[in-house]
Image (tube, rainbow, N blue to C red):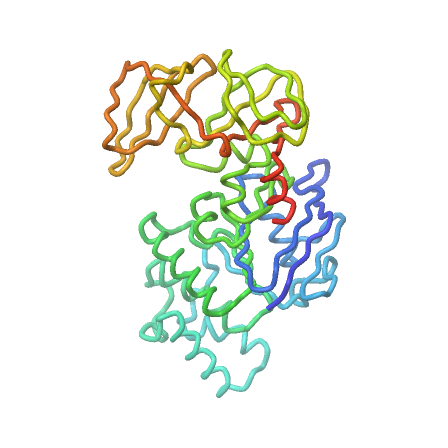
Length: 365
């Protein structure tokens, strides 16, 4: 397996820039997620790592070797596609063994490796079946087997579970992560599903409009979004983003919403004008003693919790509270916020005015 380093990667298609100035490092053995909405550049980035697209500029290092202008056949990687890309006229055994036959590996060795991969994936009983009659999950296992059998330096996966139904997709995501852990493989995985990225990934790069918005472990990205885009994209429900106008100085530890002061983490940057007060729904408390109040417009019961939607002077707020807490539509309720969980954003730049604590974590992520 191998470390993958991306330096200032850029890809232009005529006048359109699909990826711009992307830089990050994928450590040996990591399960690494490229996350973002459709058209953000994540698949183009993956294809450049694979050698299916050549970058306009920038460098790609795989296991210490600069490969940005080398074809895919010289990069020792395996690619798993969303739509499986199996050979329909071959059975399962023949599909898995095809890469080894292309390398002219001896038949006895091919038989041994195919049997080993089939055992790992739990598909020994379907080796002689045609792929056309298989379920989506079994076809995905066959596609994974064809990639695994080569023992490549890295596995690149482009939304490999996207064609599966929701229930089986969750099951396969657990299987895929367990397989990764057993193999210790370096895996780069593209998805637009934030829950999939948070559940499976060791590290995540969040992309938007061809640029890297944030890079770090899932908890860093969820707790301390570096930009307004990340705050809005990550989380279900997403982070509450309440606009206000103020001047804040470096070192400030409080801000005022509609004249009510709230403690925040110590700011590392100054800003003036339109700002955003960001807080996750689970960090909003219903506090009748608070002077900052909201009117309940909706109550969504989710079993163990409920989502309360309130109209406040600064906009809509969602609070995730215990299901046992009694809340009714039309009720006037005071709101409190946990200081260390608040993020302040500058609207003009879209960037978070990071505190000492989360700046340090992000810098070393």
